[in-house]
Length: 176
Image (cartoon, rainbow, N blue to C red; front, side, top):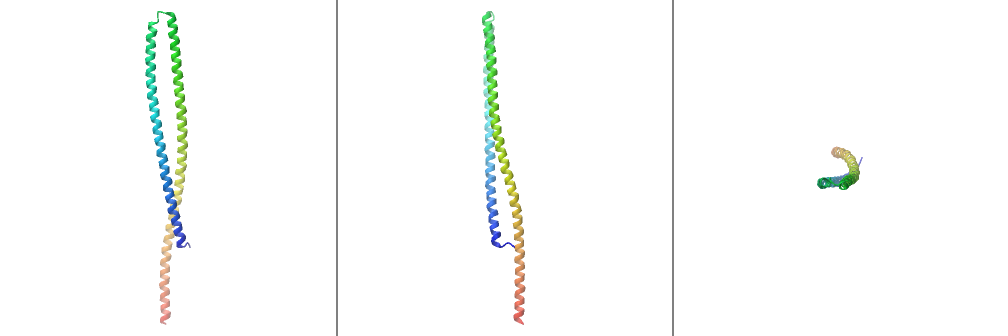
């Protein structure tokens, strides 16, 4: 039969565990909020990259337009035509290389960010699972504590009844 002091000690431990769980849950929520902010920042960077790509595409379009104008002026001259063709090929090659480099850079950046986000999400899920398990253990312990408190109340009532019966017996013995 547990004594009052051990029950009080268990209550203090439960309260300490509850406080620790609340702090861990708060930390976990803050970590998730930080990750969401980082994801928002990544989305903003992706939007900015798309905007810059659009500006670059427009500039390339203008260059292509100018190139076409130059090509029309140089049609009469065979050498100029060959030069224009070489310039077109060079421009196309440069454009392809630039697009490839941009795509490769974006892909690498997104892969690294995705991996980091997945790693952090995995850690957050592990923390969440641990918190859930500790919360379940705390609930079971609290239920056990409530049962123990009910038993203590029953014991107190029983002790009071026994004391009353004992006093009645002592009184009867003294009366006799």
